[in-house]
Length: 514
Image (cartoon, rainbow, N blue to C red):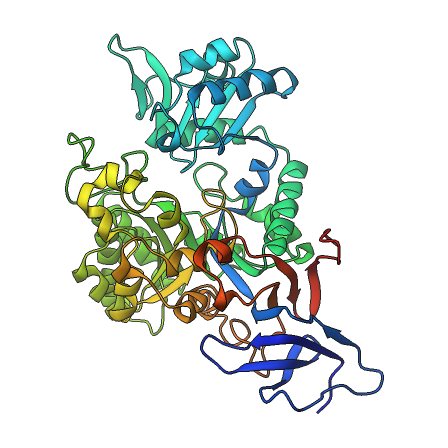
């Protein structure tokens, strides 16, 4: 056996449920051997050895659903995630507005955690910032609140569908659905390419620091077309994480021109539960006048999927409510019938509410559910958002164990910047799901964020486990994550991230980033 590098740790988890190894022999970035007995010494004269001591190495963690540009841009915006009162929100806006550029962007506001239980109004933002344009993004990115200065500066039209009006027919400043997308497109269009490149770089560095070796970047779309995708293609080889790009466009021709084998991501088939726009089969518990929205007519969605499928592309579509999930699976089923293909691995992003019938259909179609367990951590369980919006249906959200029992493949992600890039948090959330019968074992949860995520982009031959021949990509955690309670696991310290045998992140002995 030849190796150019040896890695050692208290335990090296080579695959979910596999026996621990204690050393890893690597050559040219790939695993050539593992020691599962703890007896063999791979070290040879002149071969460097990296010993992580009492830390534990996991197969490199993935994030199967990241909005990389939005994550990087949010690092430059006012963070409202810690606000617990409207007064906190308005104070942050008032303090930050004078030094902001053309517009003050604020991210991460979760109105379900505010004492008042509602978003600020445009009028309240006007008082906090009378002259500087302000845009406040709800945590799910499906609702935007703007002040009057922003409406004037960016030409936001009160006749757009999704503009909330008061009793007198005047805009409140709250934008949902199509209005939210149009406003974001206007604002996003002012960003320079250099700013976007820097945002991609910063988000990727954050991912590496959280133990991520590879991710699925869902970029472009109605807000930016394919420009953001092209920028990411230019810089992705310089990023510290392996990046699989999902172009959020509807043109199979453009996807092929970009040399990408897939199309979609968060191409919105519906909205979100928090904004009452996820398409449900029954009305919302706290807004009985609506069941949410389907953003595509059946024929239009079928045509989009059919064209991409017939072109040999993998398709991924955002569907949160059970009505939207059914519409997506209908489209996948029509495409599979009209143009039979082996192993398509089309994805449903989120699938927060899914019926037993559709779990079986997903399994039969070989569809992958790209899920975000941290949604349950933040909004699941008694007294939280899902119960407010859905009532007893909150017990049927994010059906992780039911999906596995039905034979459906799962890929784990964060939907960052909606929840943090942090696969360990995702694993913790999956193992502590508030609906006990939907909880996963540690091994099943780890599989979602390793081999399951890799398989969701046809990359399982090179990624997902530390088997000989695969890339030596792994995540090193200070404590054995298998022995930690969920709250401890969510905050576990990442000691190092290694991609293809090279450090992409490392902490020194004092805990500082290297």
